[in-house]
Amino acid sequence: MSYTTDRQPQGRARSTANLLREGMISELVAIDDYSYFISYTDNREVKEIFHHIMEEEKRHYGMFLDALRKVDDEESAMQEKVKNEVKLSNRGREKLGIKNRPAKDDLLKFIRDAIKGELEAIILYDHMVNEICDEYVNKIINSITKEEKEHVEELTKVLVLLDKDTYGPIEWDI
Image (cartoon, rainbow, N blue to C red; front, side, top):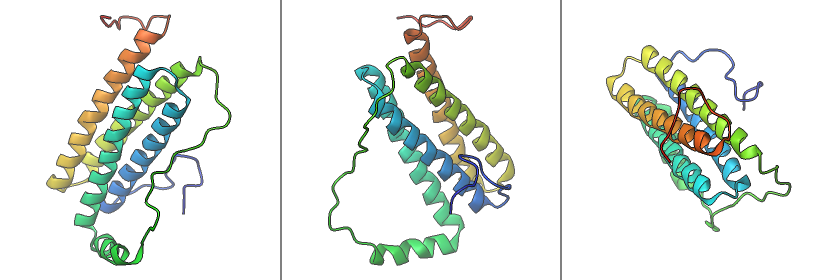
């Protein structure tokens, strides 16, 4: 089952468990975006920054899932069930094969898209904290939000350094 509108939840999550699931979806979208950006970027330094952020997004996904298992008994039971059912004989890492590469000038668009995604995540996670009364879960969400804010700053610095145009009062020492 997926959303009928790309990247947009249908309805409003009200329970702690479903709010955590929304967080997981947000992190999966971010992981996919960073994977895509990495595959199309030739700039080694930007690739390293994207990869660093993608690794943190993967950790955030795991943090949300771990919290979900603590608040949803059925989810926790499914973890135990699947542990014994799903086996992979070939555990090699998969890599996305890209056929048509976009133009090099799309790098700035990728960076702006990444910043937009980070800002959307911050807004979502702040909303989640306002809806959830569980102190343990809110502590996890707040730590993730702090890292998302760091991602905004990292990506903005890269954007300002690479773009020939200026962004108002924003400046970074090179």
